[in-house]
Amino acid sequence: MHPPDHVLHDRRIFTAAAMRAVPVHDTGEPLVRLSPEPGLVFGPPLPYAWLRQGTLARLRQAVRALRAEDPLATLQLLYAYRSLTAQREGFAASRARAEAAHPGWTAEALDEEAHLFAALPDVAGHPTGGAVDVTILRHGTPLDMGTGYGDWASPLIFTYAEGLTPAQQENRALLRRAMVAAGFAPFNGEWWHFSYGDREWALVWGAPAALYTQVAEPE
Figure (cartoon, rainbow, N blue to C red):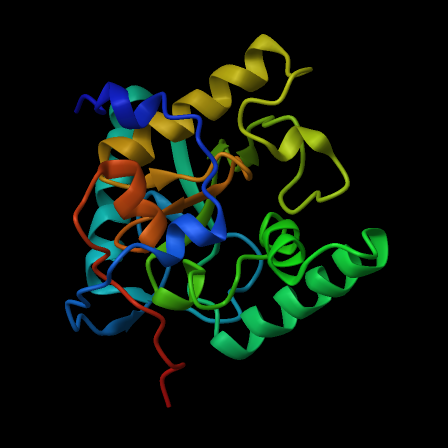
């Protein structure tokens, strides 16, 4: 599988305003429950073990693409669906930090600053069931990506951050190739985050509309 160059090398990070402008034509695909399977393991226990049906299918494609390059590699799923309640709480905390650090900023500017660290709930990918956080294991050990998952204190969480070693850069590139080959869009603000069907995916791939909107947690 050959990932398209325009997606593979896209270094943009989109504003919340740009994402809000993307129309959504939801496919109505259900959230499906996840369980580990060959080539795909879970990291910490998932708080919400669901993804959209189409996202899960592409995650399985990513496993095949990864193993085509490295038969010893395993994809580790770190996070999948997130409830809107949890997303709103995360954004509110990020917004409060932005407001404390930048008194006098406009509401729009504060929203954009907060969005860099916790996506605005109405455009966030995880609550659509289309976004995943992933890394790669080899012989059960995570590859060195330059930072740990969720290491918000490090500027190296940005995919193309300066200061990465050549080995760390190649490990990130391997993950990115596998995910993009399966149809995911990378988020360059977090090396581990990829999405299918959400507004960010539509912007990266040039789709006329997103396929998934935010959905409620299953009963």
